[in-house]
Amino acid sequence: MTTPSGPSRRQAGIALAGLWFVVVLAIGDAGDLTTESSRMLAIFGAAVVLWVTEAIPLSATSIMVILAEILLVSDEAIVATSEGFDAPPYSGFFATLAHPVLMLFLGGFVLADAAAKFRLDRNLAGVMLKPFGQSPRSILAGLMTITAVLSMFMSNTATTAAMIAVVLPVTARLERDDPIRTALVLAVPVAANIGGLGTPVGSPPNAIALGRLADEGISIDFLKWMMLAVPIMLVVLVFGWLLLTRLYPANATTVDVRVGGEFDRSGHAQILYVVFAMTILGWITEPLHGIPSAVVGFVPVVVLLTTNVIGVDDLQKINWHVLWLVGGGIALGNGVGATGLDDWLVALFDWGSLSTAILAAALALLALTMSTLISNSATANLMVPIGVSLAMSPAVDLDPVLAGVIVALSCSLAMGLPISTPPNAIAYATGSIQPRDLARTGITIGLFGLVLVVVIAPPIWDRLGLL
Image (cartoon, rainbow, N blue to C red; front, side):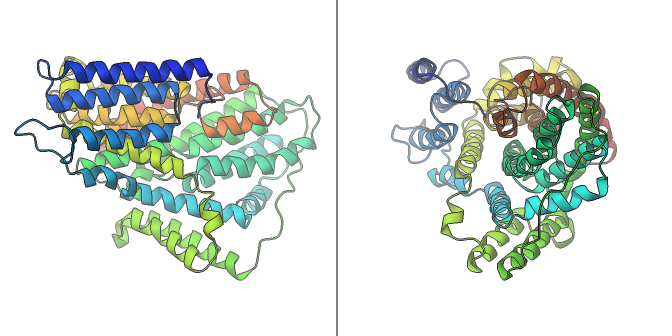
């Protein structure tokens, strides 16, 4: 997530977004662009500018998108829509703030905050690190494995915060000039970003892609997403470990990893342990019991609140702005589809002349580049609707699931700058790593992952019947 911009950049972003919005609205329908698709183009372009410049908070842009769609293209629009246009109900745009994908994410956030409250995350890390011994290479492997696994089921931001708290006492026991200190701190955001690929709750781009595909009637359950993403996650994780051990060879022969403490044995803590385990089991076994993962994810919210494991004060700590950001992205995709703007955008270029591989590579590279410079959630909000709509076009030979997954995973693979992801920002804020450390590891890992996602994985997914 990017750092706050200066006043001039904010003012320029607001001015440019406003100018685009007014000019496109004034032009109205032109050629194949209908009145409603023109209005949606005005909203879409303004959102692009505001998300890229961060002239206002990202979540503020998202809720502005929802309001603008209600006022301009819904059945309660304040200006008349064209005769014959089937205006979507305004309640549908409001409903994106309670989309099932957001309920799934809410469950993940509640579990993550409850785990932090009872120090479950740190204690698990301490226990799980012990089997890896004291060799620097094995400790680095263990640290990355644990961080990635936790990040699959918890917010990667929360996971990074917890694991950085585990790592800093360990690095403090090492010589100041030992490269392994940098490797250990750098391993946390790298592994958290990579682990976020693995499940629908691991990273906001995953949720945005699932929401857009669901609106097209394409359902991907929790286990299917894992089958698509976990093999890639594991390969990229191993590559990241090899890269860090090569770039930052340890001087020390052993690393003291005595971290964590006694597990909380209170009644509330034991309720959390059971709920945490049952929720993850419920997500993974969705194909067996048929209960949607969003419903499974909502259960811990209810149980932990009603048993007073978490209270109102704990709820206030949840990243509600992330849920609003994702909801706005889903609303943007709905508006693009309902007004026909997606068809107009697709018709601008002869996409059918491109091979599937080139088209997929272009989407992935654009998503990776944009996510390196701005929030990966904002990038997914912009790129997922375009990618899925493009794949739905009869002129393009691209599976919609492939398009959505490629864009989502490419967004999460962007980790080259301190501003690229919240985990990067948290690790950089410790002062233990430099921007060049993030750049040479993050960019190398991102490009390696891109090759896997675009070139190697799709044929395998196709043979396994996942597409």
